[in-house]
Length: 296
Ligand SMILES: C[S@@+](CC[C@H](N)C(=O)[O-])C[C@H]1O[C@@H](n2cnc3c(N)ncnc32)[C@H](O)[C@@H]1O
Image 1 (cartoon, rainbow, N blue to C red):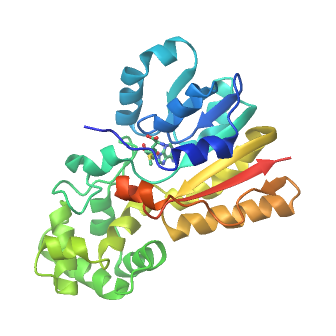
Image 2 (cartoon, helix red, strand yellow):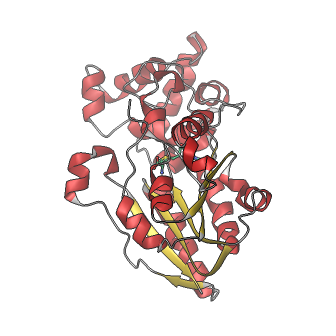
C-alpha cells in the first residue's frame, strides 16, 4: 500500500528554495515524500512526526538516507519544535515545512478511526500515546460543549441537533465505533445508507471537528508557527500546507502578523493550489493550500 502521495511537491521544493548542504525541518514527516524530495535536492532534513507508524515506515524505507546522515528522524509533536530542533542540532535552519492534516495511511487504516468510510474504533489519535480518543469526547462532553465543538471546529450547521442526538444515543450505549457515529448522523440528515452519506458534504464535518479536537490541531498550529520563525536563519522559508479553512485562516493571519512585526515577507499573497492535473491524479490533494513566508 502507498503510505501517502505528497501534495504540491514541486511547489514546496521551489517555495522552500532548497539548496545543497543546508538544513531543513519537515515537521510532518508522514511517509517521507517531501523529505525525500528535499534530500534529493541536496538538503539535510530533520523529520518529525507524532505517529509511530510514520516513524517506523520512514526508518525502514529511508535507511540509507539516514545512514548517510542526510535524514534524521524523530518522534515528537511539532508543538515542541524548538526543543526538538535544539536536541538534534537543527536550531538554525533554511526552511521548515508543515504539511498539515492526516496521511493517507492514517485515513486508510480502519483501526485508527479517522475515516467515515471504514468501520473501526472511533479513535482518531495521531499520537497513539494520547489519553483521549474521539469516542471519549462523544461519551464525556456535555451537550453545550459538543455543540461548541461541532460549531467552531466543524462549522456544522446542524451542530445543536447533532449534540442533542449524541447525548440521547449514549444514554442507551456508549459510542465506540465509527458506525455508532455514522448511524446518528445518517438519521439526522435522512441518508438512506453510507453511500449517500459519503456522497454528501453534510455530517462529515463532525468527523473533522472531532479529529481537530482530539489532536489539538488548531492550538498546536497557533503556538508552533512563532517558534518555527525563531528557528529560521535570514532568508529562511516557512512553508505550510493546509486542508481546511480554519487552519488556513490561522496561517494567513499569523504570516501577516509576522510581516507587520518586520520579521520578513509573505511570498504568497494568494495561496498556491494544486493544479487540475494533480487533483485528477490524487483526489486527496483537493482543498490543499500552500502559503510561504520568507524571513529577512
Ligand atoms: C499530510 S501527512 C504528511 C505527509 C508527508 N508530507 C509526505 O510527503 O508523506 C501529515 C502528517 O503529520 C503528522 N502530524 C500531524 N500533526 C502533528 C504534530 N502536531 N506533530 C507532529 N506530527 C504531526 C501526522 O501524523 C501525519 O503523519
